[in-house]
Image (cartoon, rainbow, N blue to C red; front, side, top):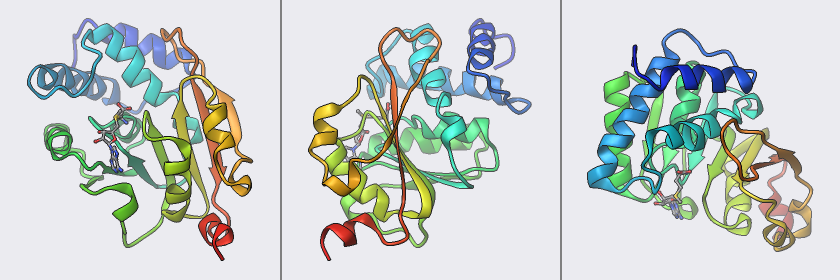
Length: 220
Ligand SMILES: C[S@@+](CC[C@H](N)C(=O)[O-])C[C@H]1O[C@@H](n2cnc3c(N)ncnc32)[C@H](O)[C@@H]1O
């Protein structure tokens, strides 16, 4: 939204992340934030209500993983109000983003965002992760603030094309969750994320989907 008082902070944060946004994306990101702020009053979409805090903990946090997104199709598992999927879709217009969430109320909000922002490459799936059977595998599968890794990684690998990436955004390093994974899935790449304006630890865990799915290997 042009002229919004949050725009300068967004530009500074994006620069600190080392990113360049396409034309109009910063304004669209702020429009999304304002919609989230407005709908939050009635829909309880996010526990964070202060717009300045939303900018850092929602928008910049989501954008911080942009360099790790592989290919042209992304599945956001447990997307809630569209995080990180909507900021990623706005920052990379060629990306087709599917928002998967079992909660119809949250999907109503994200559909409205797509309409208002003209996000033609945004797709919606209202289902539980374990029941979701898309026609095509995705290049990247991501989740933020979703379930424990053992409930996410094997299913995410099932939905990812061979050589594609499974990403999990976490706060502090989830050592117990990693230890609870089957041995074959513990070998992920750990990246500490430095998100401007976010004091707590942020981590990105990355798996590369093998040619034979890890689920098949674990249960031949
Ligand atoms: C804590 S919220 C996180 C939302 C968003 N990713 C974020 O970072 O703000 C978790 C979301 O996962 C959804 N969810 C929980 N279990 C799910 C499942 N098994 N399949 C699909 N969505 C699920 C919930 O409806 C909720 O919107």
